[in-house]
Image (cartoon, rainbow, N blue to C red; front, side, top):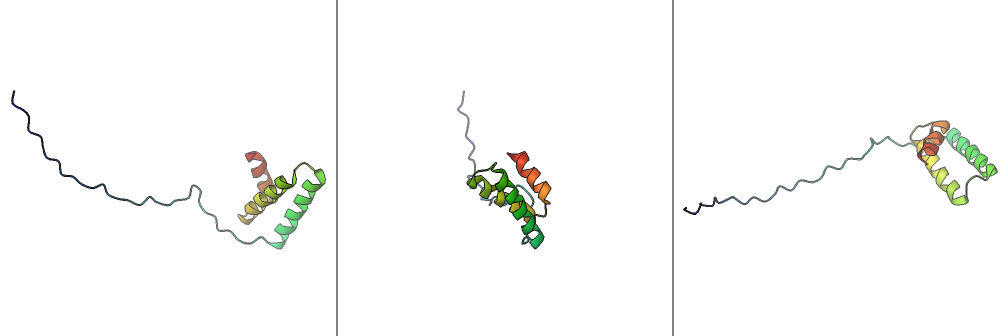
Amino acid sequence: MAPMKQRSVAKTSPKKTSPKKTSPTPKVPKSAMTDTQKTALKKHMDNHKDLKDLSPSQLKSHRAKMASRLRKGMSMSQAHRDIVKGS
């Protein structure tokens, strides 16, 4: 048998594509907290402080999570439910 001829394959460099930068969740424009939201958050946190159900570091984390959700437009009860559900 005669040896098979090898085809010459043109070498091409792979196209460099930049990965698309997309966030996993749609971004919601954040706004500053209103005075009523601040007051409600303070009352909510005082309630947790009185219950003594969270350590100081947990209180700080809970406050930050609540504030973040309030800035996104959630109500106090929605925000609290969302945090408790995630734990």
